[in-house]
Amino acid sequence: MRATPNFPPREEPPAGAAFPRRENSRVGAARRRHRSRWQFYEDSLSYSFGSNTKTPVALVVLDANNNILYQSNSLPADLEVNRLLLKRLQLTPLLPPPKRELPPLPSNTNPSFERPSLIRPRPPQFVTERTTTAVWRIGAAKFPNAQVAIAVSLQAVDQEMATIRNIFLVSIPGALLLVAVGAWLISGGALRPIRQLTGVIQQVTVKGLDQRIPIGTTDVEFVELIQVFNLMLSRLERSFTQASRFSGDAAHELKTPLTILQGELERTLQQVDPGSEVQQRLSNLLDEVRRLSGIMRKLLLLSLADAGKMSLYLVEVDMSELLMEMLEDVEMLAPHLTVETDFTDGLCVKGDRDLLIQVLQNLFSNAIKYNLTNGWIQIRVDQTPITLHVTIVNASKDIPLSDAYGARERERDRIFDRFYRGDPSRNRKIEGIGLGLSLAREIARAHRGDLTLDLTPSGQTTFTLTLPMK
Image (cartoon, rainbow, N blue to C red; front, side, top):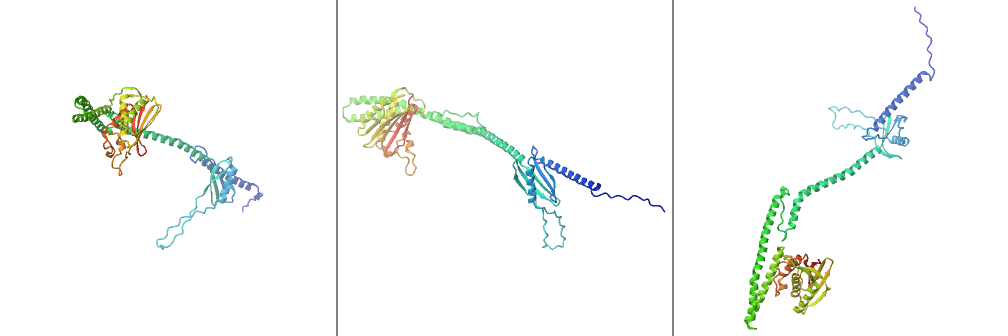
């Protein structure tokens, strides 16, 4: 029988000797591994938010017994941020454990049977907290084995938003400016032919019928329109030239026979017996011939004015002297009228003396013919450094603006029309053919002035003659 060797008995290690020391070293190594893993996770989060710089992130990890497994300690405000993270963890409820999907119901299950709904865990809630140095976005979640709270600084987000805001503040106005400039250029190019056509239409007057729009500088879309407009201007110019030439030629051709007829009547009138019927008839004929001669002279002047060929013999004209001469004529022709004057001596202008006399004669003649029975006439002269205003006011019936129904044209707008004499009830038994005011205004405009009918109170009529001082 073999003898069994006797081994010395194994000595048990004392409490707290080798084995416990090996166990503590493993726990410390595990904690260090966990800490390095959370540290790596924290560092990776700092670069995971799409910003150009490192985003400050704070992380706190607790176990089920609220022992700290990991806590950030690399931020300047770690203590304050960690305090907010721990506070948030205390307010966060524990998430329920996830439940497995229920198996499908058998085919013979009652249709009225209601399967209990699955309880899904709520996502973690995030809040915004402010510290003394920054603003943080904090979220926390509790699990059965761990608790995690993360805080992300919004400083980088604010910087990115500020950068984007600055970019928009610069780019949007610049883009709008470029769009506006482009739209202005495009619309200007598209509307240039229309503006050109409008400018030519505005210049279509008696003296501007020779205006034409060049076709080569316009768009194709407007070529046909411009061609039609140019043809219309050509027809208008030809028609007006013919009409103006006819009136001028007729007045010029009639001037000579009328002068001869007037001379023969004057000589024959001197040869007949005074007071006889023949003398009376010859006197009436002579008056009509003189009237016809005056009409011919006015038509000739109007035709020259229409053609822009009214020649002016410019001299220094004393308007005060001319007005005094007109007042003497008024006292002789209408002694029953009261005349008031308000002007000084030595009011001089540069103009054609004979034509200005004709204008004043026409204005005073109208003031006498269209005055009331016991009426009045006022003459005022206002002088400025560049213009002279001669205003002649007389008592008269009102010139209507329109009739009761607005069907008739405004008489005030037509008072300067040729051969227009207004309301027959106002000018019945009054001599004239309606050329005086038209010719007077053409003479004033030939002097670079104007003749206007002013708005006045009821019961009076006012004409203002404006002439340049130089």
